[in-house]
Length: 207
Image 1 (cartoon, rainbow, N blue to C red):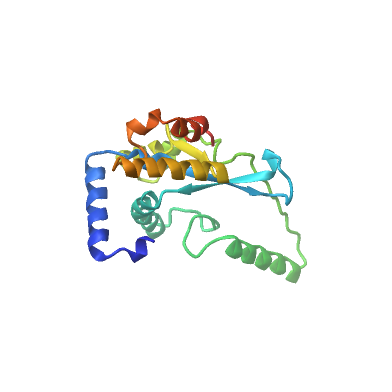
Image 2 (image 1 turned 135 degrees about the vertical axis):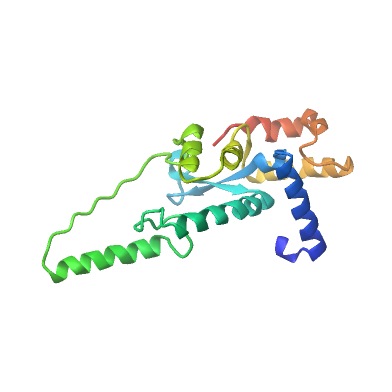
């Protein structure tokens, strides 16, 4: 959708985001996200059999990518990441990791050697990392304290909405109410709306 914006709209959005950054202000809608539950096992309704996927606000993702691309270029330029790391890097992923594994196995077969393979996983791996540890990790890589605080604070006191047909319908109703008042859905006046309390406050802090 943003790609279809005219140049004037893109420039205006960038100027507003820049003002937000200079004022050290994070809008409430940047802290709101949908949680889409993807079933791991077809037909199962158990919570343990679902994988939560967060859908972030588009401008938040674009603004954050502006910073993170600079950070990643700096890390890559100075060869800071481990060369065996295939996650979170451009043109790297499970496909490149699989090729490295296949190459290692074929190399061992050629010399008739022995290879050891270990695989492990963590339950709630992303959720188990504390905000303090996340900040320390960013500072360790040379990220400025202000940027580290900004990135970590995005997930503090936020609002998560479970994406279901009911919540989408109710949020659409809240959006219509906001349009009638010529305001946004984060307007404090809408917090008194019973639908807002049901959709937003009922799911506050769910992750």
